[in-house]
Image (tube, helix red, strand yellow):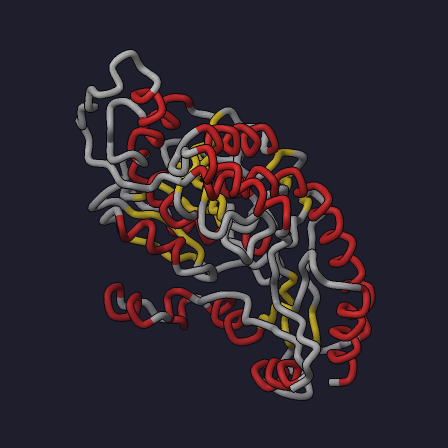
Length: 379
């Protein structure tokens, strides 16, 4: 293997993030506090949504959103069959039943007509995943479900993405973002729930803090900080720390530049790789602005080798690749507990076996991109 290694993803962090964490450490306020509040404000402003609630991960954000919406045992939650397992897990954590729907072959996102066919009297929510940074067709999904069915955005990959001129995060009742290191903005681990609904936001803020009647910040700044809060609902410890938020604040200042570079690089890939007949590059509809958390191609049946062999050849040249994501109905726990069959989701099954994410991130150089393209052309 070559010593020149190109990672599939790498966070753009450095001295400013370190100094921001140091400031939080020296302030003595390390857990959820003023930095979390500032980070929430920046995310809500950037996505044109009134409320943002910082949490420990996108997974806990999705769980919290479903709980706050009152979803529980006996309810059904429609989810795409091609997504990271956390999307479906969030419904299961609530005691609800995940109902899988196949995805569209070009967008990789949930098929709105499949959503329409999956609605039953027990349907309470749809989790619309904006996979790899491309927003799902939210208008079509809204048209496919009754008004009482909540649409929740799994915007894990979609910070900075737009749908018909509207930012991700304000397209449904609530949305959950991820700040995992593979995402564009990172806090190590961490997430954010956004919503335009003030009442829902208040429930989310309460539930992330064990269900406390008063937040820790409000209690500590009150005239009687020694008075413990009441707990009238069962909540969770899903609070983000100020250490994480201090990094997120610095990352948000870089967001627009990072997005611009990713869009330029993705456009370069699409133009450079067009001559490889067996490799399908990702499509972007005119009504959407992709954030390009990942650049996910599809290896055709006419390729000179199977997808996994191509990934191995690239790996031997120091070029990391990954499958797009899971076909969740074919994962062992879901087969065993919900008796799902991949035969019912042919597009998800095909994408599981043929999708291939190639390196695209903000630490790559012109030479890195040329190496990736040259290696694919050589194959």
